[in-house]
Image (cartoon, rainbow, N blue to C red; front, side):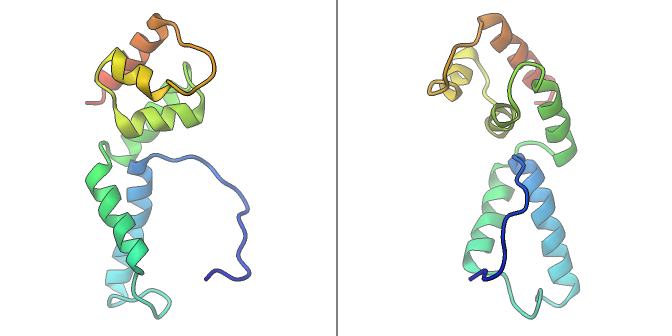
Length: 120
């Protein structure tokens, strides 16, 4: 329960960036003899750590850099989604945007794929 806490700001981040943040917490926990604030990680926190370790496809710096480059063509939220999924072809990329309003030109999508290929 998080009584008295409120969200001050939100910012979309990639799974890779989330992994970096969580791994710092894991290291702090190890340094403090498996406890943070007198508690061990919760079940949900452990699931999240497992998830980010399994699905982060890039290191955090590359992910940030790639999101920044993709923002030339996409919104930040779209760029984060694309980096998290790293689609390999136009069909997969189009699926990511299937529920979005508007359409993307094939040339734009190909530019996005070319950027992704530089980071594979």
